[in-house]
Image (tube, rainbow, N blue to C red; front, side, top):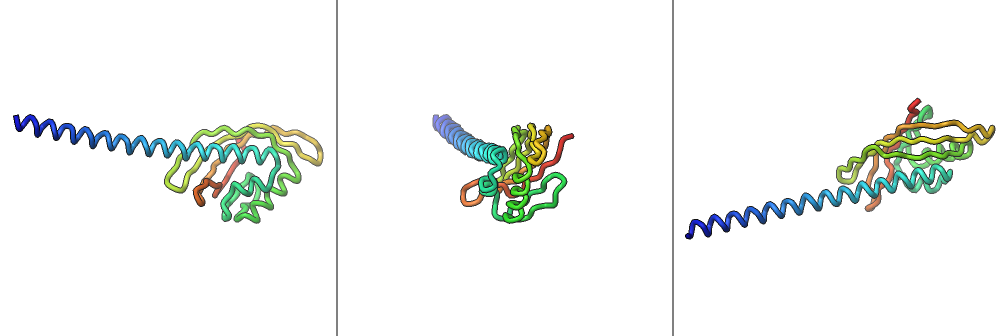
Length: 158
């Protein structure tokens, strides 16, 4: 009888430990899903700011030491260079792009995402509309509890 009671106690103790582990895993999965959702919102905020030609909004999405590696352009390093690049782009072009996210991976206070974008841009000087397709790589950093773009690189798919 005592052996049966000890065996039962050990079984229930192990079962409780398994449930505790399961709860910790579920909590981590929920937190990771929440972080991914926040990053998705950031990418779509970037898409909206780009399509609105809103330099201030775009810059607010970057870290202060953010880096932009645009297709066919010099690397913009730091907020002032990044701002100058977007200002030049928005002064000369108007974008209508839709982003599709392929992957988001989070590791602590850093994350990355792969995406693609399709749409067009208009050359303001001539009014010519040109189809545009890109693939993008974002690196994010969590700053004061908010995700920001730390590095952004894109190139043409065609």
